[in-house]
Image 1 (spheres, one colour):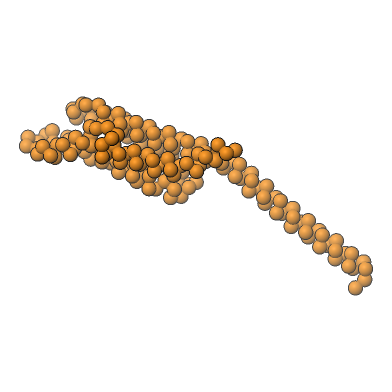
Image 2 (cartoon, one colour; image 1 turned 180 degrees about the horizontal axis):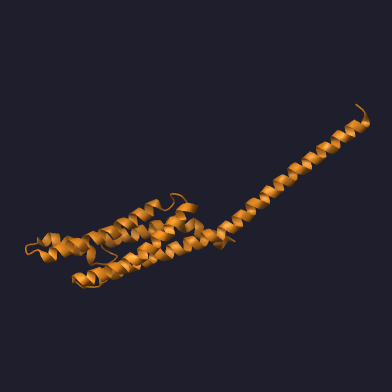
Length: 178
């Protein structure tokens, strides 16, 4: 092999290293750019989700504090829970795209609470139409429909909110560190 062949091989090797280095730098730049674009979107979604969770919690607590036993009033009060719950469900659907499975447990916990209120509204409606309702049956329904955050049902709602807070915390902390 002549000196010019060796120099040619070295030049080709250096060019290949340059191409590989440029590719690595381009890939790192793309990943940084992607992370920078996705970070604010994830933060905003997490913030919006937590706000909706707080609105649902507030609606549940407001529902349980109002002492109105009429059927029409219960339906109206129910709608004040149902509307923020639907908005939350829409945002959870968006979150499933970004974070598959991350909010499944908190969503199920809060959904059980909301469903439990709805079920007890129906039970209360049936009880009002009956003449002979056992006092313990009425008390069990009333314990869900009227109370505050310190009782058993209120504690379950607060637990669901804490689960959301814990699940969303990593996405909310990213914005603070930048």
